Amino acid sequence: MDSEFASGGKGVGKCMSAHDVAVHTSRRFTAGGIKKSLAKGGFRHIKAGYWNTFLFPLMILRRKITHTVGSSDVMLFPPVVEAAFRGVVSAETALIRRGIRLPFGGSVIVEATKE
Image (cartoon, rainbow, N blue to C red; front, top):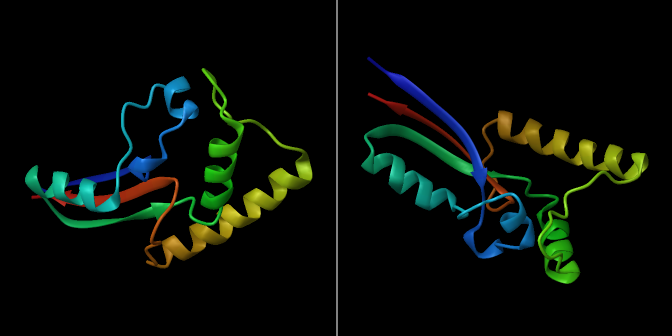
């Protein structure tokens, strides 16, 4: 019997910040690290990549400059900014759906099959 696994997780281990503490993230992952863990667990046909690539530089800049303590920096921005971000994420999603694996990002996205 085959089973499928699809997941999204926090990407890039070196990017821990006050946001991660506030939302109880105990660790971040790399695409390669998740692929190795899934392979050890018997999963095959593993595809891993990143999501939130285009907005990633802004995420890093905000989290490293603002140094929020004890709270997440995730919040709604003015509508025009939110619309721009949605457009960026929509373009990125279209690339991922076409099978393009992005090289870095704020989140890891994985597909795998267990045989």
